[in-house]
Length: 445
Image 1 (cartoon, rainbow, N blue to C red):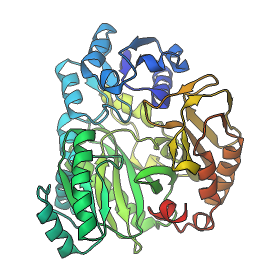
Image 2 (cartoon, helix red, strand yellow; image 1 turned 30 degrees about the horizontal axis):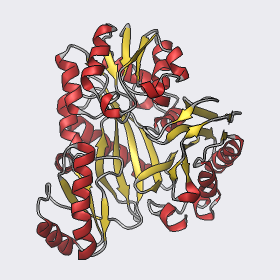
Image 3 (cartoon, rainbow, N blue to C red; image 1 turned 120 degrees about the vertical axis):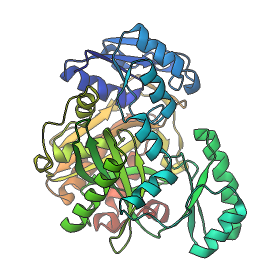
Image 4 (cartoon, rainbow, N blue to C red; image 1 turned 180 degrees about the vertical axis):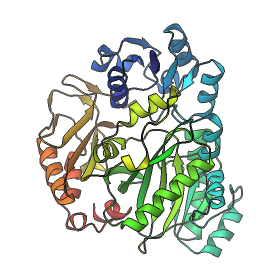
């Protein structure tokens, strides 16, 4: 096991990794920007290094500064968390060249799965269905129009190197496709430095279901069941749950097997999430693989009892997974609500400011992952998510009731948060009856 690692991230995921490190007896060094100098989790780290001003490009995305921090603190490895540099192939390559272990997949696997066009082709090779679409990146608008008319509208444009909903547009006719084509390319170029885009048939009213997998350097690859991430707004997840309420045992097994085939073919190591769309007939289609730990990983931890961050650390240190698939049991139902500093009554506008009153929920089956505290100032410089509220109960009905109770207990003042809209969603008749899909929020809220 490592003796000391560096955490190249901030907020709740930095705190989550610090805790996992300390439980394994591993020293944790954390980097921070000037905007985060008062973060309480810095005091829990074994060492904290300032790497620059609030601007991400000059701090959390500044590879030379992060590598310098790793070198002067004499760490053996870097955990990138999620976001920022977590799926940056250049960063992973530089870590390797500097003799620092990147706690994530090999560079080659990142390259293969990081490009959605290549990932789709890999899925086809192992017999996993993909959403009908272009064979590769589309350079010309005229080619996009031709393919869209051949497949039939609606279609969706996606960034080949993208994620998180950036560079993604839905088009319902030629006019909207022309507009979306240039907008998606520009957004993809700005967000990922790569303007390549591809086209897919847009599946109407699908569910977004993802499988958590872990693989080591000793030939072991295991799944930790699935999460339903259908409650989204503009392709950004809001509420996740496990298990997917509509999957039967047979389809669940097929889905997990498909995810593992893709991971094994890519010679993947460490944690990954393989994502699928599920149509109304329970046919599933591979859409992408995220080569990192996910925001919603606590949902899986709650229903399986396995600490995914500790597994990441052990695997990166070269240790084998010491259990088999039959040792991974799924019990009960877990739900996660992302709490964002946004005003849901004002088109989800950012709601920065200093927190003067904070009450965290608790009780049986309730978990809160957050870095905020009373007196903490929420900045507009970073992602608006400030907490994750997770519950675990025997049934979905009980989990919904516990989540609603916990949300009502959660007080973050005076800033506006997404707590009210989460409550509204959980109280909606269609959500309770499990009649949801990725368009649920847009249609009903």
